[in-house]
Amino acid sequence: MFLREHPFCVICEQEGRLTPATVVDHIVPHKGNYELFWDVRKWQPLCKQCHDRKTAKEDGGFGRLVRG
Image (cartoon, one colour):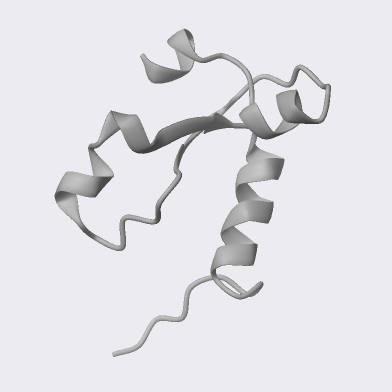
């Protein structure tokens, strides 16, 4: 439903391109926080490429480390 209402990637739009959004991104990483996860005010529409690039940057470029 969110992507129907926000169909274009906000990062691409800022760069002058209209790219369909395919991912609902959490502007602030929720890190398992249930309330933050479902806070629609902190969501943004992104294309997969922009989402992957943003996630890699936030996670240090190699994805999340799983510790156990």
